Length: 295
Image (cartoon, rainbow, N blue to C red; front, top):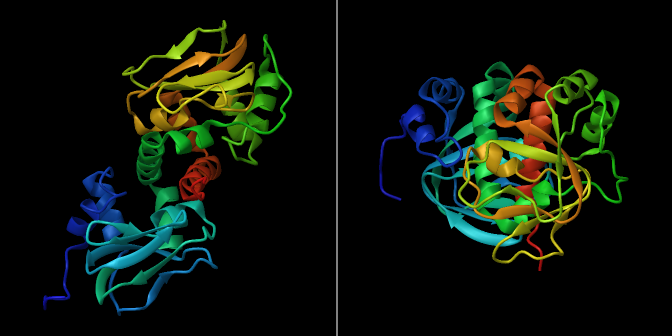
């Protein structure tokens, strides 16, 4: 590594680090003020596969050997090591070791969580980032959209109590807060789909997600088949909607289907008012990205 001053501009470096580019300048400044510049000697561990991640490291100069999802990669400046692990709040089975003497900005995980609670824009920026990464992978998109196992169908004709039940049993909305679920329930709109009816088409902006209550939905496109059905408790459209992206494949009803539709802005409004639900949604989706690749 070439000689260079140990002083760096945390704001500049965070703004060009993957995972942080979606944050506005004022929120980057909040995180930059909490970041600590460190030197990580060659061979030192930044992440352990046996322990939850304690911090995020934005690489400024140097190289880090990362093992994640059963794959190995060497990353350099502009990459954030440990971001998904901190957001997921669990040991993910991966690890990271400095390949050479490395300069990084260290952002403590607890401080990052507190910053998300104080500034919803930070949390929503990470939701957008995680949603975009999920949308890049057909396998991860399907995993994020799947519901629970062997759930009984609900509907049609869902009153508020049944809408609450549908939300409570879906893994997509991990929250112990009944207030949060009740507020979400009031934002839902029931829709009924006939077999073969499209939920969306390729290129259509992702503006809402569906919570499947009865029936099933099939993704249509390269690499997808009838085996990739999303049944009750599933949430087709969630990753792309959180990312504010356009759909890259179609979704159609495989059977007579009852779903509860939730718009992007309405979802974010509820998450902003209920941090525990928001952080739980973020943790779950980050965990999906960290799950080992099948096969």
